[in-house]
Image (cartoon, rainbow, N blue to C red; front, side, top):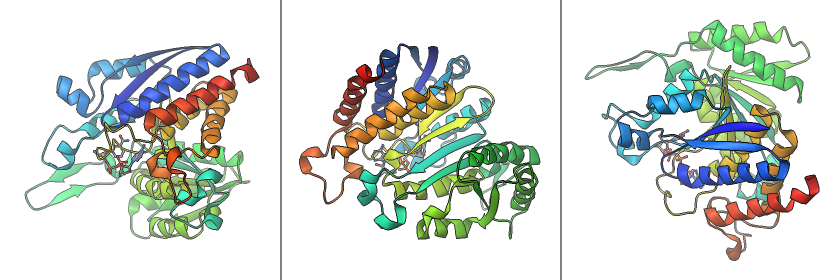
Length: 362
Ligand code: NAD
């Protein structure tokens, strides 16, 4: 299979982790006889520095002509410390999501047994957790009208029926292949946009009578997620609620550095770790590349339909964890000090596992 992949390393640790995503994809291509070609493009702070624009036209063009996009993360302390700056890295990412129509962000939260001790929650609460988040990505408060005067600032949260229907369908379709439960998260006791969200989800639910729908307010959901995470199967949320809940859920899994995501719409899809550019550890070769590597597994499965290849990547990550190797973000008291590795070391071990599997599949 021939596929063209555009790589947007972005900022901070984005470079360190996407370089491993690319190496893993190259090895998979070698193992299974595919041709993957890669082209790089600028996004975020690095794009502002080079062109003054967080999403240069050239980057958008390279994304539109690709079969899939691998993204690291965007963001730089310069902007975090100065909210008055008008041109900002995240504008590039938001515009990219909007331009590509990436309205569905899929975030699997699965617990690797090996990392149960790295979670903030007790082992018995989290073992067996398997949640699939569907976060709406191109609507809601992040894209609503804004206004700012000296004393008053306004951000508006808008959802249309169409926006809710299309992501709800995707969530129900996924639930049909799983435990057939959808938790839809809103704040319908207070917000009109949530009341429309709830009514629309109920309408779509009628098309999937086998799936149970449970509506939950966001404040309750935030609490239930750490009280008893196993109750969740598919979770359907708007943009901001999903952003917050999935970061919370990352702690169930042990670290932001373990969680992958896929953003899909009707054109090319974008695959990225859920973490940010982590400026506090950027350039130190200590970032966990596994969220990005697991994002390549999602790409292989969802974008290219290469299930065996996708399983190979996940199996390689699991094999390295089973041998006790950790990056600093997922170590615990039991971790052997010699097995706490740098980005390049753990990336290489995962790559070696995939190489070693070549004979099994070829
Ligand atoms: P962050 O995810 O970058 O970091 C939060 C914490 O998790 C930090 O302590 C960091 O060191 C740690 N961490 C994150 N990824 C890690 C990894 N792979 N391995 C080990 N540790 C990891 O979030 P933040 O600090 O709130 O934001 C930093 C910057 O990233 C900001 O500029 C923010 O706007 C941006 N950001 C971008 C995205 C994106 O590009 N999708 C998402 C979130 C935040």
